[in-house]
Image 1 (cartoon, rainbow, N blue to C red):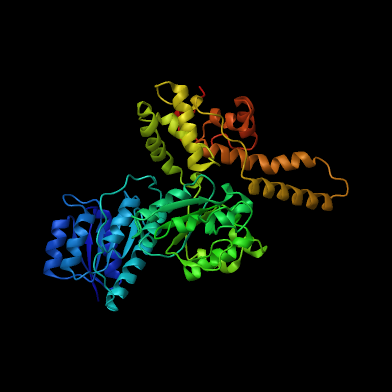
Image 2 (image 1 turned 120 degrees about the vertical axis):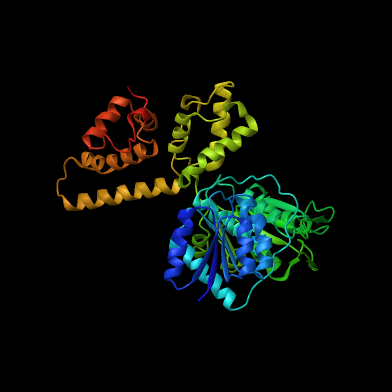
Length: 474
């Protein structure tokens, strides 16, 4: 039987956790403030702690160090409903065993507590790591569960020297993640060097990365250090990793395995202390299968992976991002009009955060200091990602082959196809536009009367319409 200390001022959270833990056979003490938690910990040392960040009086992260001292570093699970990268980093640096974002699944919390108790039983407890200096201005914005996981993974890997592969669509902020990892790492005072592989001259990629000796090739009048050598002691961020030529991949593997850089034309490698972070929006596993990327290099670079979700999968962050960008270039546009926020949350954002920022700047110019309205924004980018368009075309082709094979003399084939596709398209557009037919008609390139008629035809008239007031139609 273990003794658990719950530190949270939300009665519902404490009640649910206490009930579940007692059913599992544990003893539970509750505290609604950091000061009360100190008294509990001094009276009876807990085996594990569940600690909320937002508490009356002293906050949880400030109290974490004191609780660690009082409990001989009992494993602590930090929970918060207001997490960001700074919170995750401070929690991990302060010695937290795990980090959960509210609202969390009860089973997820129980599993984290059991892992913490197992660690306690094995007596593998570490003291708090020294905290870093003043926080750098936060650039990664988001409170969605998907971004909480990103913050947590950054916090876990930043103190290490492991290679990190950052994946995600273009415009999701992969370089920001790389900079955050470097900023919170022991190498923070050494160089951070971003290298955009696609921007390098294909015939000179090897020379740019590794440098060259005098006379290595025509035009090499003097020796030159490569980008990897310039970042000695620091971090190199290789963007668009899939574009590295195969001939260069073998030399990069040597850098990772032996921490040595061999200049072009040279025969004497020199030691180089580097951490390599890399990013790609392409499917590297497919590239490996097709022989376009070395499998051994892939596994060396993919020690730890952080995936950035597309913006359309974290709609709740759009308002935060909009405020973040508008504070930079047009604070007069704040706060956002509710109608505009609904409009932004309904767009697909194939260009992700980069597209959102550009759209906001466009709207700020059009609004001329006034509130931003939907009509101030550029038309949504209508193109789907190339892979999606190709998959859709293949699916239609397969459907047509199947239908043509079943009917000797098919009729009304086009009408059949529309009956399959239109309801799904209309339903998704209405969902993303929050039931606003005016917005849906604009996205579809149809007039509102046509949209209304089609919705009625497929029985979607009232779909995704929370209130009549949410539509601009009378």
